[in-house]
Image (cartoon, rainbow, N blue to C red; front, top):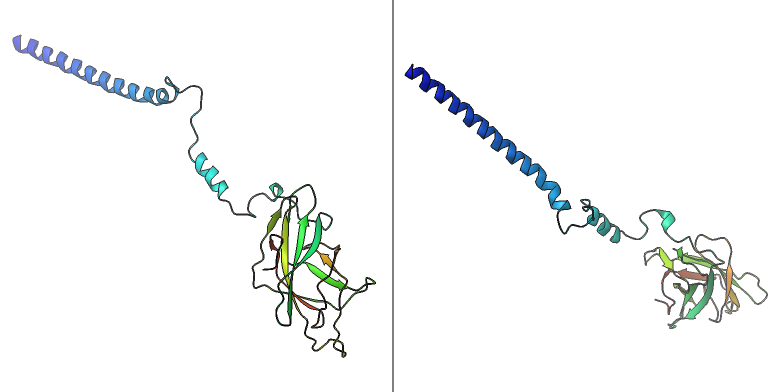
Length: 218
């Protein structure tokens, strides 16, 4: 009987120990799960929601986004001929060579974009066309430019004043009165007075792409 009683006591103690261990494990799990929301909604956190992972990185990436990327609807429209005024800034002459900056100014109340080479046509006193050959000089890369109201872009022009093949036999090259300018991606022109002297070389004008600023030619 004594042995039977001892075994009963040991069995009861074993069951009690198992229940105690099970309760400790459950209490630990419950404490761990309740700590997570407490770190967000606890005192001092206010009503602010937790920041979404990666949101700061997304903003940083947007700040470094290169020009020309993203939704095209968020960028200014292309500059129309009507939105621009044109003028010429003379450059420093060299032996037999002449230079000028063709300046496009955004005269509209809104920003616009432009890029590339303008079209040119030299004209005389009566508005008649003078032989003109525009040669694109791509030694400088073409860049997309945004012109704010009053902003300027300019293209360097180069030509010769030394008579040669294709020029009048008397050696007198044409002296234009004006130049008609067609901005990039446009079909209509505006005129600027040409007070830069004669143009030889059968009217060849070497033209660089538009760059920011209003000259002098670079």
